[in-house]
Image 1 (tube, one colour):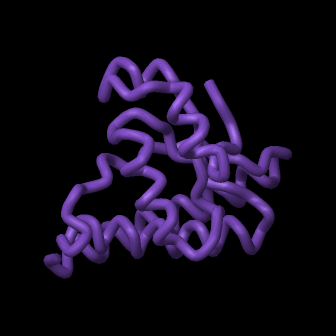
Image 2 (cartoon, one colour):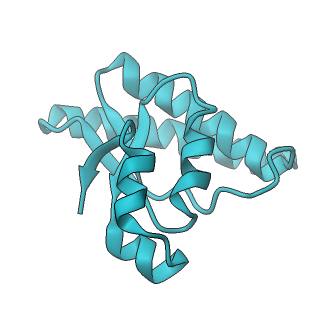
Length: 124
């Protein structure tokens, strides 16, 4: 990844941490967010960058008793779970949105609940 892209990503991670701090100051411990589409290629640069950023954010969220809740929909629930399973904490968890799942991937939301049950911290 180009140095410029890495610096931009680091800035986004730090900004996300400050957003979580503000949310905690305002009395909530869940910040919903989109992380983009989790790539299929686990060995690819984009997957690695996303995994590294989410690992850092997850560790930070867990350390302050909070969650970054990523929205379901861009990928099937099994693929999202396999990505979340690579992280060391559940500080990055799931905002379960069944409508997104159906509209975007055609995924079965009932099955999605069973698959993602250990990560769901909010639903819409």
